[in-house]
Image (cartoon, rainbow, N blue to C red; front, side, top):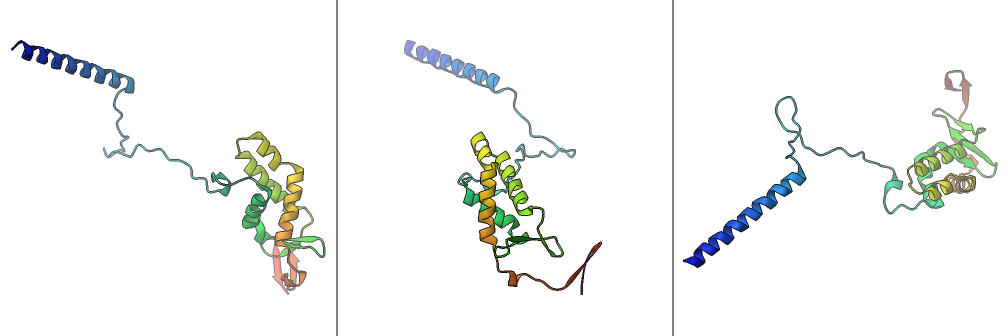
Length: 169
């Protein structure tokens, strides 16, 4: 019988150590959290909302190369530009008519996209490269080459420009 008492004493010691360890874990974890409740007493999920970033440059496999940025620019804004290389002129869609671009809109929009991508990147070297005049100049040349079309395909229907829009003639 002395062995039974020894085993009981060891079992009691093990239970005591286990309960002590449980208390320490609870103290480290803090009080149990309760899910938030709305006004009706129903609990809401305790997940936080994370903003979805749909831009392609947030993908882990996207590389900020010149070609990738140009392709993204063409995908986003290509329909608004009509470069005619033989004339050396860009036409911009104003929403109603194609207008000769006299304000370097293609360059400005491409630079704006480069700044937006650069602001979302963590490395300063990537930002500096994307926002450099050399990168923007090369990107706009490549964008023009991808978007270039012959002049005879441009819709040149007779349009009278008036103060508040345009009218077919």
